[in-house]
Image (cartoon, rainbow, N blue to C red; front, side):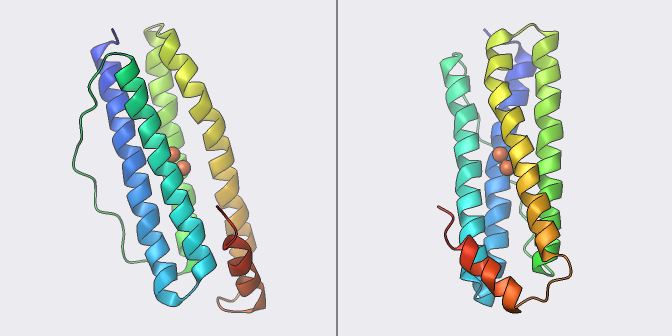
Length: 162
Ligand SMILES: [Fe+2]
Ligand SMILES: [Fe+2]
């Protein structure tokens, strides 16, 4: 049996991952509305990944004999200013998730809950990749004119993400 505080933290993290998916879909819609299909595709795929993260928490809770509880999702920001602004917001969102994963890890270590520690290692590695991904996009988008040649090349490249 998992300590109660840890169950709550894992359940909350499942919710955050669903919220991240929700937020990335709101970002995708900005690009869809502007006709940038590659960027929209990138964010739709990103949202699907976040949903798969949420499901990892779901299945872990079930495996540990706990029942996942579903909560109201926070409404995402639907008022985006620009592609660069979206990329910066994405990085901030990922950094917040990283902090959250770290705090659950701290709790798991405190309780010597080895199964949870083992489970969370995958997320620690994943967050390194996620932050790198958005730092890279921010760097590419900085100083680039939206709709310009380089931007449209990026849009074509991002259309390939599956
Ligand atoms: Fe995630
Ligand atoms: Fe993520």
